[in-house]
Length: 215
Image 1 (spheres, rainbow, N blue to C red):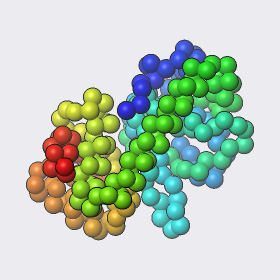
Image 2: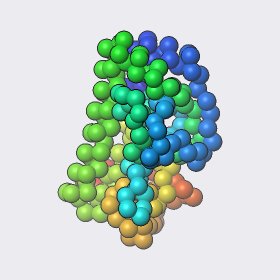
Image 3: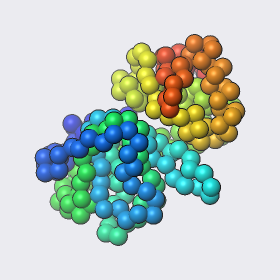
Image 4: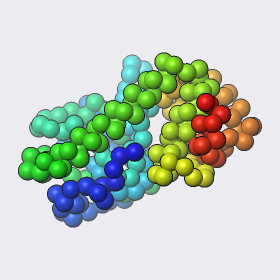
């Protein structure tokens, strides 16, 4: 799990003071692939989805939680977004002009290190998704993916019920399957009492239980 922005360098907190957090309603588009990347976003609360267009469909890539941010690739001017981002829940986030953020990184090695760690954690999560698709059958992939998502959202790694703000179609894209097949398996999980399906979300009863069943 990425370090909280509360543990971030003083230069980041200074940016937060200059650019206070704004609240965005659910399903607000923050940016789209192909647009000029003019800002960096730091999530204060809530969850944001990152996705990328692939031919005729838009597969889900990852969720961004409190303490994480979008736009850490903005090391030079003229960058273009390769992904799209949309709030998955009501979300509060800081919107930093890319130029100001780049200047702060250039002046503060600690902030640069913090950005590198954010990138490392994101790459690690993507590698985890690829590993599951290569080595696990679909039912196991779904169980472990839901457990991973619930543990990240919960913060502590364990705990009770956690709601994952993903549609069944987005879950299918994340595990590399069709919506129909994924829906069938998720409904089976619900009948077993492992999850609860809601409109636009999946509620995990216990991440620890899902991991135990999968392994």
